[in-house]
Image: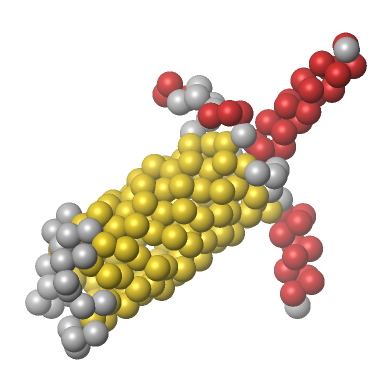
Amino acid sequence: MKKLILTGILAVAGLATTMNAQIQKGNWLVGSSLISSNFGLNTGGGYNIALQPKGAYFIEDNVAIGGYVDLGINKVTNGSPTEFVYGVGGLGRYYLSPGEKGVDNLLHHGRWFLEGNVGIGGRSVENGDSTTGLDFGAGPGYSYFITPNIGLEGLVKYKGRAGFGSEGLNSNITFNLGFSIYLPTSKAKQVIKEVQ
C-alpha cells in the first residue's frame, strides 16, 4: 500500500514538473484553433469554421511570442451573406503560475494563459464587398495537458478589425477550441532536421 501511495505521489509530481518544463525559456509552441463560435457585438452571432495555425518561442519562462495565420468562413445568423476571413500577424502569450493572482491550477494538469495578437486581416463577402484592416484581439485561455507535450485549449477572445477605407471597426467575441504541442528546444531541432 505504501508503494502504491508513493508511486502516485511521484507520478503527480513528475507530471507537474514536466508540464512546467514545457513553458520554459527556449522551448517552442505550435498549434491551431480548429473550432470557433462567434458572438457578434455589432453584427449578430453566428458560426465560424476556421483554421488558425500559430507558432511561438518562449523568450522567458511563461512568456511566448510568435505569429499566427487566420483562414476561415463566417456565417452570421441574421441572414447576411457568407464571408471568407483571412489574417496574419504576431501574437504573445503569458502563462499564469499556479496560485498567481488567485488562479488555481485546475486539476493540476493545465495552465491558464492570456493571449494577445495584432496584424493585418480582412474579409471577402460573397456579395462582392471586401475590406482589409488592422486585426487585433486579446483574451484568456486554458491549456489542459493530455500528455506532457500536448495541450487541449479553450480560448475566449475579443477580436476586432479596424477596416481601411469605408468600413469602420468590426468586433466580436469568439470561443475557440484547439490544441498546442510544446516542444523543448532539443526536440524542436530534431523535428526540423527530420523535415529537411
